[in-house]
Image (tube, rainbow, N blue to C red):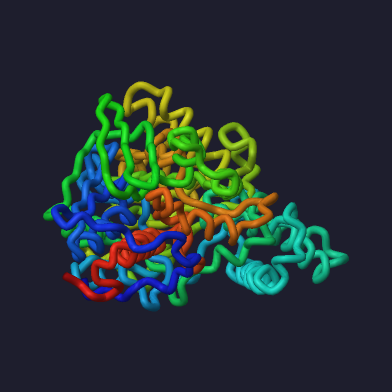
Amino acid sequence: MGQPSSPSIKTNPSPFKLREQNPSSLPKVCIVGAGISGLRCADILLQHGFDVTILEGRDRIGGRVHQINLPSGPLVDLGANWLHGSDDQPLLDMAKSTNTEVHTWAEKGIWFGEDGRPLADGDAMMNEVWEIIHGAFKYSEENSESIDPDKSLYGFIEEKLLEKYTDDAEKRRVLIQFADIWGTFVGSSVKKQSLKFFWLEECIDGANIFVAGTYKNILAQVAKPALENAKIRYLTKVTRVETNSENVTIFTDDGKSLEFDEVVMTTPLGWLKKNKQAFQPALPARFLSAIDSLGYGCLEKVYITFPHAFWTNPNLPPSAQTFDGFTQWLAPTYTRTTNPHKWHQEIVPLSSFTPANAHPTLLLYIYGEQSQLFAHTLSRLGSPAEKDAFLVSFFQPYYSLLPNYEEGNADCTPLSCVGTTWINDDLAGNGSYTNFQVGLREGDADVKVLREGLPERRLWFAGEHTAPFIALGTTTGAYWSGEAVGERMVEAYGMGGKGEKM
């Protein structure tokens, strides 16, 4: 399709000879899941003459890439809304070719301390902690084999701060609060981040870019070949997968069974964790261990829309606005009633884009235990008004500290709130994406096991959890993983090989 090919994904030599082809029929492949990896895998297989069927449990494509219109009209991403890395980035190329606006946030942020007062030197302190985090990447990569599996990134940062500020406990206490920001990257607390396998969190070189125009057109381009040439069955959930050396039988929740030559499971890692029993014969012990060992985060989003972007200065151009990046609240103690755990809060304004995509909405990221609480609360509240009231009561103490806020002013009163609940979504694996938590002992090997799959059983796996190490947990990683499985299957059938399209 003219896109940069994936980084080399090394797998073991094929444990099987070339598949025997039936000269009277094309190889029939079932792809479970119409997310980015499944759609890209379908594209590769279709280019080489395979008969492809996609079974999708939802009534739509995209999986964890999904958009809705806010009550006020603007389109937003409920799932992925970043492109991680800008070098050799196929999805960024698609963003450009589809005229999808992308945005790089201002590096300067606004920081509020635990008492709700601005931190004048917040950027300097954050840079200091980021230097330690960059050092942790290097330390993890160079010493992974010898690092205690139970050691966390948080512990590493604590040690480095103690070395530098041995006699200044207050300085250490404030600086360590900046470490909480890592949770919004991985969907779990920084205290759960494995130091041993922290190096697996390094991404593609280049900038992290926000998809201001949403993933809608990117997804459409990835999906186009499958939508045009594959058979897609929506609202079809797979309940059992039976494999042998000859074929694959897929059982679905409507009581039907379907036979294929191969199956590619692109279900999320979280789904695999809860459905290991769906495979017959049982998955090998080492494969089960890999599924169990890898972590799965739960990043959620809240969109709060106002009549106007009260935080902007209408007399200044966008480049001169003081609030054009992330605003953080570190371990807030002034909101004990609504936030007794002092969870870190983060807001970014969607008013910063070009006029075509800008709207007066604040995007808030939450993760870990806060995600669990919010998802549980939102699921039991009946009406949209009740959900809005809950979200406003929680977040008002934070957005009320933004520039130009006036209590009672109509422009400062939310029109609507929308919160995601991926953690309640079984098809999303009850979470967001793969991460690497303390206690992990063979993280890189676990990924390789899942990536290799079980081709001798005609059972293959793709998704962000099987991506190249530089793209684990990302949409680009999912894209590359589907591409790699497709190319391996083409090779197994001797139907052209990589790069030789039909």
